[in-house]
Image 1 (cartoon, helix red, strand yellow):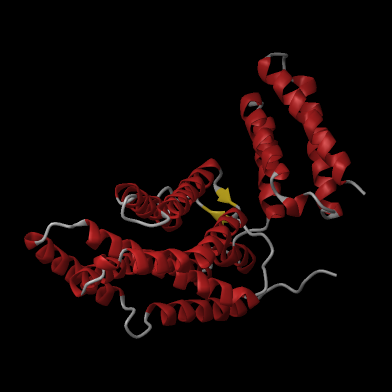
Image 2: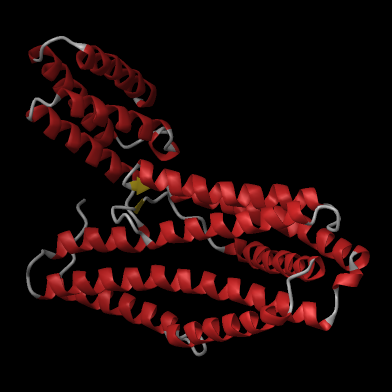
Length: 347
């Protein structure tokens, strides 16, 4: 039985609700963007004034590392306590914008982690168990670079990779951070004085504000998308059905099934244009996507299997009319891999 169509009024009410919810999040007391930016400038000014008269020393840097570990430990505790949330089906986030806010966060993770890696190497004689800090922040930074790479590899990106990396990092910090903090306090107690504690606290506060601003940038970007969608629906530029699909993608991403259908449509367009090179490239991307997406490997819907079979037949017909060559034989090999995939998922 088909689902009832969403009316224009229902879509407007839903978007109004989502817009108000995001605006309420953005305007929480003490979390205003301008207030955060003002705090950021103030802290930066205090640090510049402090460093005019004092050269950063090892004790000061050790204290900052201790605060950094404490910050990550608190974040990991919050993450562990939020495990009651139900896991959501795999969804894909669009990275069509080259300067996506999510990409900005990945770059910041890599830069911040590189700083901690550098400090752990610099302070290896003073920091107890420094290899833990070196290994953990190296893993953290490499994760940020991997997420950045994955986001450029495909217009759509599977957040599961981000979630699994994030959970691993949180678990490592949750288990080992308190041990390292205890060792710093007991074995590097000379680093702990009021001046160093103040500098360490200001530096980690600076980091926390930058993280919050990055998250707000992501929310602001989403808010702008929703406002544009609402405007196009109100003016009748797009139908409620089209806006509903765009709203779903903006809020929770698209399903892997929808992404696979986009690949099949792109392949069909390439074959209609007799562009064998583009057809080969698209089919290869689709096979890689199918191979790394668990949701499409275990009992996919019958309609999806039927679409795959139709795509295979159209590709066979395409190969029958195009001349032989390097791209022809590569595409033929890829078609055999598609046939193997279809046989593997068919009931």
